[in-house]
Image (cartoon, rainbow, N blue to C red; front, side, top):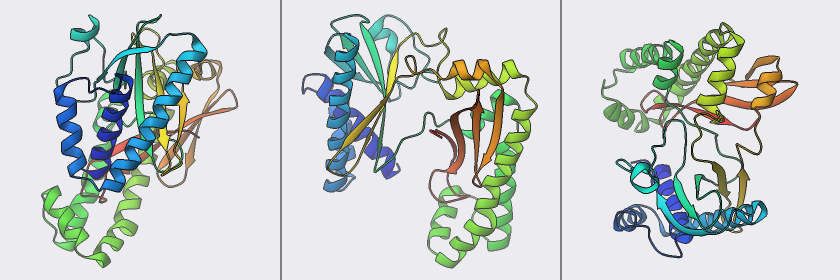
Length: 302
């Protein structure tokens, strides 16, 4: 498991611990944070917990400002097998609702979710869908573009077909790694971005609005059965936390007002502008080693 994933879990579980009255929500959460902490340095664990504490304070401030009450219990939801229905009595589509920590309040609403992000600095992405998810929704073939570039480097550098073995081989040869990044990795990201742009420009306006609102911004009122906020903890002491309220700070109104304009940003991203307002940008990225790790997309502030 990648170190950033391990760190994110430590951040989320510690946040749930704080919101649960300095008590782990369940034994599985406690076991998982202990395992993940053992795989990370003491310094990194300290950073993640420090950011969680800043996020905790920011969430309490948000609740106070909105007169929503105080936390009485919390649950770590970002794990396989978690059932919202068992806790809340209703199902939540985790593909559309990115809640990592579920909080029960003593006021109204009774339940609130937190989408937690932890970074060294800056803002975290709104959403990180897999390229396969985008292909399925739009009927595009972005994964096919990446597969073509993978085949090219396998043939030229005689690399293993297994992604795990290929990653080890690339990272073992710095010269080869640099060549792959400049001649194949970056061009691959650009090619996917350009293909994605073509598909988006061919979508009817209503379809664009639906796609951006539900798949990227999670702002469809018919889908958001569980209100949530996105909190990004950052820094390495001092720690800070920024909160984004998708419901109170909705940008969908700009998409509806239009016109929607798509712009190339850098070599691997597309910016979405509507009603003369920058909404967000969508960026292609590899999880770690280019052309030897999973492909993702990230929605970021713009």
